[in-house]
Image 1 (cartoon, helix red, strand yellow):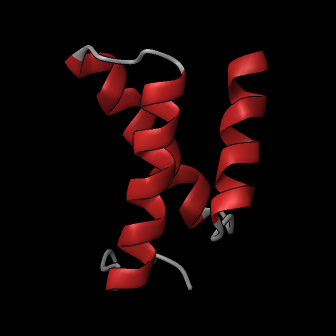
Image 2 (tube, rainbow, N blue to C red):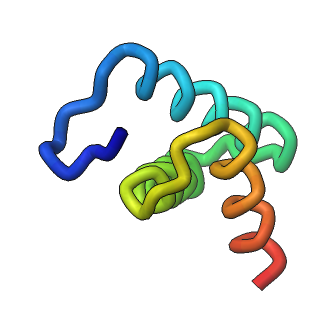
Length: 66
């Protein structure tokens, strides 16, 4: 399951949407630029092999701590 082709299936979109929405809500990310940055991170991590909700959330948490 990767986005190398640039196309995500409905299950993959659902996973990324859940992670993005939770991350923005939990960290009070509301601005357009900040939300775009968060979305880009989700996509980058997903393309890098983090394909589950847990893996994506863990990578986002690590990126915030850096």
